[in-house]
Picture (cartoon, rainbow, N blue to C red):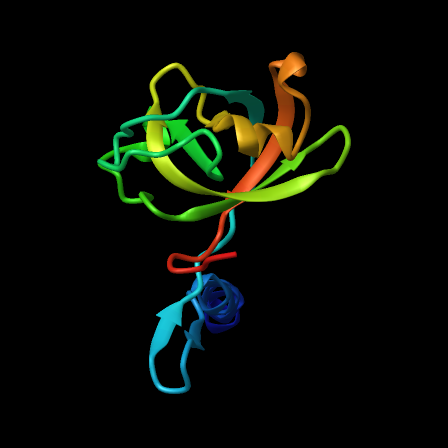
Length: 141
């Protein structure tokens, strides 16, 4: 009976750990990367006038760039990483590159360049309901 109970605990634990393991994916036929679980964030989308960002690059309002919340930005590990952004009301979607930190943003909020914001709504709206997620590092539209 004890052995059966032990098996009933061990087998599901092993299966769960197998499903939680990142999957290696070939990117060029020989080199492998680990797939990360995609986390979809939801929050408010606003716009800002660009310039020198926390990643150290100077950007322009016509570029598809964003600032992410300081809590996610951390030490800048997401600099240059693209995100897919969707307006949850009209379902319009666009991509933009992470170039800055937004100290006033909540963890699910994005501050977008005017051109990025206009792909999802109008500047007159000022604030949009959005969902977004990071693309794989190195991915470009």
